[in-house]
Image 1 (tube, rainbow, N blue to C red):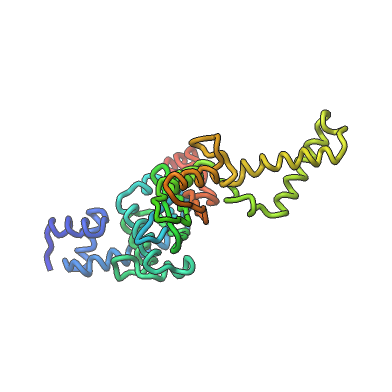
Image 2: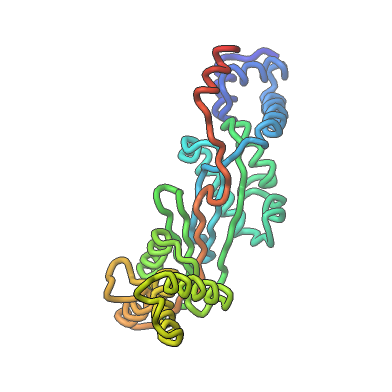
Length: 304
């Protein structure tokens, strides 16, 4: 079956694959468009296996509220450039929609779900994205809240995604409150949400460090231990203020803690708002990025 330049163009638009690869696919499949797509998919699956070993630490953290369900996902790619690619961003949004539709128990369950609006599984759709974009792409993690009121926030075009979950009374609109709290979480990345979550071993470690610091300070070293203990207890309040969201100074008004801001803002709206939970994903956090040695790369190219 013969094919035309228009067929090559159509295949490229359908798959996002380069013109030469589309032409080869149509030649191999004797001009049959469906077979050509299958040919490219098979080629892409082979390519994705080769690319799977590459480090994907860029990409996008994305948060949204869909049909009342709050969702946050992280999908990684190899380069920051791809993280801004429209097809990649659409794929990430589709992953979020799939999470909301299926509420999977874990990542393996999500990857086996039908990707939103297709007959493909998320795994198959991810493999197709590798084919289309030409980089290793990985759905890394997700979280969602089905109860209460969720508010999403995306910082710096997907560098950080935050999802805040609130309990709201009197039907008030707590979107602005949730957004302010999410922005605080994005900026300061607190270790704990509330001081009640700080475990005894963390407290013991902090106290130990402070006591050693005072023992090494000539002004403090000669003070009685009970005096130093009292000073340490005072410093623990500073630890809470620095490390616990609700006890932190509110960035927009440092005369208030975050907890007091939530209470006063809710009161002004005629209701109450209680912070319940939050999730903060920063793209690539904890992934060891490959350090490129450009001098070596150029030397290899010259030798090649």
